[in-house]
Image (cartoon, rainbow, N blue to C red; front, top):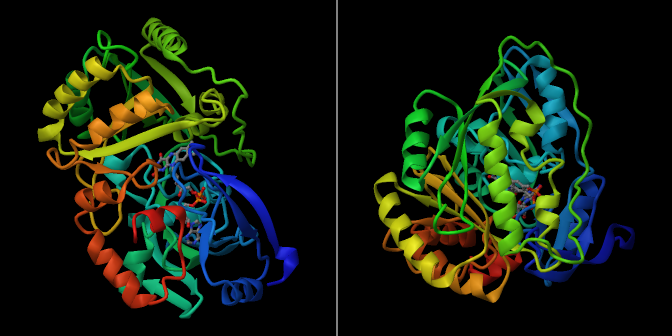
Length: 441
Ligand SMILES: Cc1cc2nc3c(=O)[nH]c(=O)nc-3n(C[C@H](O)[C@H](O)[C@H](O)COP(=O)(O)OP(=O)(O)OC[C@H]3O[C@@H](n4cnc5c(N)ncnc54)[C@H](O)[C@@H]3O)c2cc1C
């Protein structure tokens, strides 16, 4: 391998719970991508490494980063089609398409996520109740695979590999470029309506009801103590059609630098939760917001993650059917009483789609919890894990670094189909990450 394109570096998962010394390689020409792939026994693709779990590295694989492949290759305004290289970041993609009042609505919540990373994770945005996941915006993909070479993937060409690649966590090869079907966007400004809720059940009902008429519905809820559990706000963002501002955004850099001393603890969480809710209740029930703060809620608020310090945090994102939600929450609260976990974030949204293969997608409610990374919380989380089968809950592979093979097998009923098809396609199982090894995918 050309040494100039190869660097050893210690790499952490975004949640910082797993790290490895890895070989990192950054080709800047297609020929080099081919050479590096041919000369490496095991490979994994890496985008901006913003997956919470270690999906884009492994101590035994060369991580190939194609961030230098970030060109816009073709754009057809009439047909609303765009072809871009997969190293392009979401903010770069939006900076181009928004000029034409077009976008893809399935935008995950941070601007420097790459197009390739978003496709491999089958990412979703805040409007996932209506727009589902990024799968719905993909027309075709150009893939490079060490053994199969260059492959065009779409509904009509290599459909099986097309299906495996979207949400395939980088295991089918390198996504080099993609053609998206774009949608019209009415405005780049939003009006945010806030609705106060007192319990998690009330919150769920509000979200289900509001999702019928509105596009961007999600909640922020307290989970810092049992008394206030679920108290919070349902946010409803809708586009401000009176605004004609389609200005460019600055191209953002990642601002994640964990503090030396962790600042999130039981007291700081309760204090900030109390203040946050008070301020929200005191301010106007409607406010104007710009595109970046609605679509990328953590942008310029990276300190939320930095406050966890070097030990990091654990996120658990779960899909559950609305009919099972209340009983699950009752059991959750009973366990909460016993184990007193330290939860920094609790949020709900509604999702639409069909669960297949490894995809985190279904017609279900999406619950998100962030926990401080400590043994007490891990014990609590393991008790929650044991409820997944009973409530037919699907945990996210992209978010939860702790996921075990046993839990994965029980909750991803379709995973054996993915594993079989992947092994038929790639008998040597060349593309491997820490997670794919642990889950034996
Ligand atoms: C603050 C924050 C907010 C987020 N919000 C959301 C959200 O709202 N919704 C959501 O769904 N997700 C969300 N995510 C998760 C994020 O969308 C995914 O983890 C995404 O995969 C990250 O992209 P990346 O470019 O960092 O890729 P990486 O994390 O580097 O890689 C992710 C996966 O993609 C594969 N991959 C990367 N590039 C390629 C390529 N060119 N070809 C083939 N495979 C490739 C990797 O092998 C790996 O399996 C969020 C993450 C953060 C940090």
